[in-house]
Image (cartoon, rainbow, N blue to C red; front, side):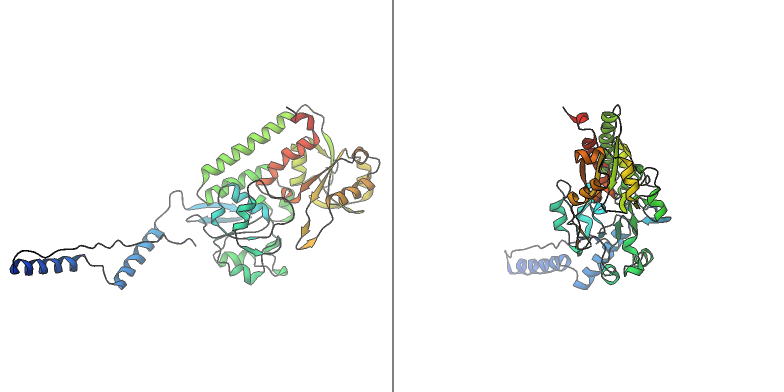
Length: 366
């Protein structure tokens, strides 16, 4: 809940001086006493009551543009005022709020140490209290104790009761409504993701926090950048791309559904696993070998839930060993793509330009 603004009572003090005749002095004393009595502060209990009443009136007063109702994960979320005590889950959710200039409203965040920060965001991240030392939200008791009035994440894993987490329903009952970015509310909806879902999230967050103009400006900026990429790669032959998270067989890879597939296509590439119905999935080594990729995207992250993970060069070596006769293997051509960009949030649209520069460097020369 947001805190009511502080109300500081103004106390008037008047001073008088004595002078003239004794009668006049007595009259002045009486007059001054009456004046001081009339202007003296009200008793503390009366002042406290007045302050409480004024604060209640201000809290109850409707705010311009509110109430706001948005739909998320098949639920309608209604806000009478902007959230003021927000908790964010996996880092792309925090990145998105920071991009909207909403860092001051974030009261707690999870840990992010898997890859570099977006420019200008690390200092803001460091100022926000860490409530979990992994990318996951804290366990149920700790999470409920935060007293959040809004929770933003980009997966349902952090709300799984079987994992000891507070459920969406439990948080909402505690006054902490949950919003899931990208519509990643079920395995089926993960596969249905489109880039337009990121724009929709920005519009919804702009409305929820009462900053629709900021959201519109950010969307326009992202759309302009994406249009520039589209124009630059339009006349170039698509590059055959394998997107993988390593593995010697089966291979952890990205199929023809979901966010990574969308980014490859928008960047002027062709996903060699486009016929695989899946986002993050397992594919046989034989299929990867036969795909003959011309370039490889490697999911880059150094830690996962506190555990060290294989490096991007190591995962690239595994891919090249499997597709050893491919153009990508012969040229050792790969891009380490921060895995945060492969989740819903502001960063995934920025990453399209990075992928396009990797696939079509000549399209971005001066």
